[in-house]
Image (cartoon, rainbow, N blue to C red):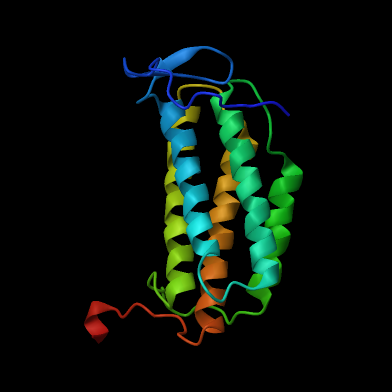
Length: 184
């Protein structure tokens, strides 16, 4: 493969616009740009999570796959009409979600986004994915967005919630339960 980025700066965005993958230009504040920009942020947060100590090989492999899929999904949103995420990717997330969740006790209370370094980083990634989902839904109200894109993000945030629970228990911190104000 040749060089994809021979120049890092082009000055074409100095007017507040950016190029989409189909060659068209749009504002840097467009819903589409916000959606795929937040996917990039979520992908970076998962990278920060992967740098935490205590990430097991199965979780590392899963999250690396997710990073590739988020990059693909960003491409899908950057190129109007392009399809990159399919029902099979969503099904794979559901299988991992079910497998990791089956080893956890049922939740009796809400949990706080804490539980040790890896768990806290996972919660941060989860909340960024939720924001990416909200922004993708907002985009879908204005422009065509495939249902698979939204479904993938919904399932991914659920998976990250379960992984945060797994990580909190694995490093010995345990989950931090929310205490109802009437019980504090």
